[in-house]
Amino acid sequence: MRPLWGAVLTTFLAGEATSETNSRHCLQTAFPDSRSELPLLLNCLGLVREAVEVGVQAGVHAHNFLEKWKGDRLRLVDLWGEEGSDTNLFYVDIANVHGVAARRQHRIQCEERLERSLRSGHAEVLHMESAIAASQIPDGDLDFVYLDARHDFEGVVADIHAWWPKVRVGGVFAGHDFVDGEFPEGDFFWISALEEALPRLDVHVIRERNRYPSFFILKSQEMSSLIPRKVDTMALTLKLYADRSKYFDLWARKLKGAPEVGECFLSSCKDTCSSDCSQRVSNFTPSRTAVSTLRPFACGQGQETCASEVTLDVDVYRQVCLERCNVTCQQRLELFQKHGEQIMSYRSDRQW
Image (cartoon, rainbow, N blue to C red; front, side, top):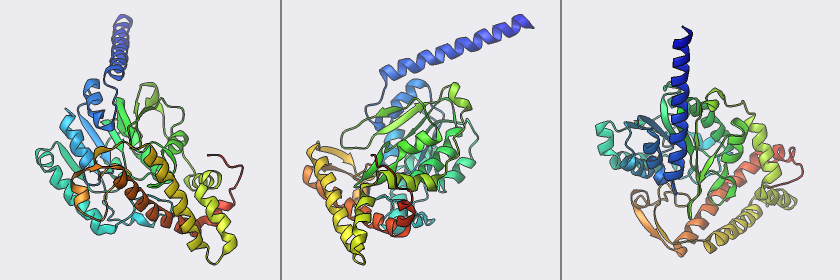
């Protein structure tokens, strides 16, 4: 028995070495310059069975993904806003606007855009909440997961807990908007949430012009035993705002002028956010982009912006950015009116 076991062990180790060599080769030769090139990396790695995208909107990214990916099936997970997620005040995000009717329109456009893939079985819609969809998939069953749903701290932690176990060893765990901070498009905490739930992993970041970066993690054998940590998301969210939020500073200072604090805060918030837009515009490079899935170019009220690509010049870029400020400043005001005292109780030396 010992010689046989030795042969099995040698074969296993040889397979591990081959896999590691292939991973290094693909990272060197197929490292994506944009998230649209992630399918090419997956093809190189031989990850061509089952994939999931969480947060689909009008299906532009999913359509582009399926055009390049040689895999069997991409499952698309989205509620399209039909279950009342808007009630979470910590969800400061331009995606958290426009109401149910507009989001249903996104779903219609998604299904029209992906009609051929849905009919062939190359794509499948899971119209359900993220964690529920994940619970229906066996652990270690997926080659690829791409998370692009909620970006608030609680939402990201929940998605990490739900989807990390579903990725097999050698698979890729990835997501969009890999940033921390307050932006015209919302308050995003992907970096902090990942560090709290799955600390000290080897994270690869894809940096693109005019866009928030995506990230991906190659799930190694050593990572396979990692279980996402339990996180007190409410306490840590309050602390993030207390320690880092420039907008909470504005709100706290405007309290001295109560009862007109709301109007004063909105004015100051929009001025501050406008400065962020001006800084962004100074680094802007005109480009052609699909507006429906790329912040800050998410769908507006007009249905046509969800269904097509547009050429963005600097004036359009600035106007879109300022429109986002109007939305997210109102969301921040509602958040601070509800949770301001709790946030204040977490104040410490500020650092961002």
